[in-house]
Image (tube, rainbow, N blue to C red; front, top):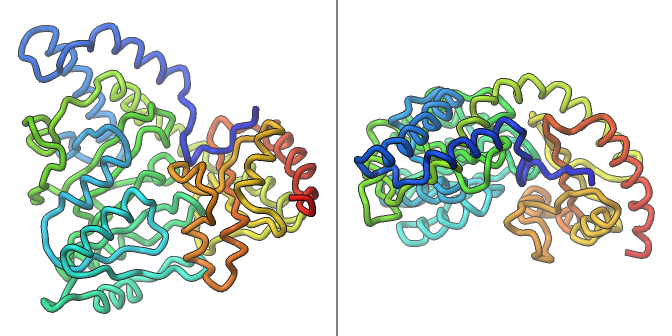
Length: 376
């Protein structure tokens, strides 16, 4: 099996698995309990928090530990205070898009920042979108932006947007779930109010995430019933999952060092796809780990299934949309005049464990499968 779906989840290495096994032996008690067993679980939790904080340039006290990236994104979008219109990009992940749209429809409207052909808008275009979305009070209540696109890998100039938001007094929520481990991160440099992260994107377990919150933000908890996480998220985080997240976060520098090699392998694979008629989706700077292409004559979901039968794991779009036989909403927003691109989108995403041999085998598989399009 050749696994090229790292943007859905990146496989854990032995160090992550070992950290979780070690935590399982000592962290079975409730970490909120004051007795010795509870303190042992709490120690595991706080050690993980420190490692995650170090990986993103944060202070541990500013991190809320969650049960995954989706919860972190929802907590940010729903929990950052304010009432009024919401601005978000057309290419957001459903974990931010859906709660943002619901909030905007409730509180004053939804404005959209367009990304034609996936090109990242500059700060001036972002500020114009803010002005266009403004309500009667003259501004929006919240801006929501991905740092790295989950489908195309496009890197948006979020620090520039953050400067605009600071000047206008607009809270900014950043989905950085696909950025961690792919580009260097310093949450303080983004100008954001809240930044979401996911363990599974860096080789940690799926049931772990984190949300960084600016110190002066009165976050409204979305899970209630306890004072855990300094009153910002009720319920005890899983110390075992967090131990895995912490170990994966401690290895982020190693992942970053591997990115040039990952990019070279991605480019080799992409060149083979282009030679067989595919076109690349997205323009501008992107991370090393992904190639999103459209293949004329194929339906993306059928192509993914055909590749799977040959032993190649890929995706049509976001993993949360798998099983839905529909065009990619992200690619459709980027290319509204070319609906075939959204229908035939294929996402191949790599990680540090992807080898030259994996790419060679993947090229053989796509070279055999793509010509079957006439019968697809």
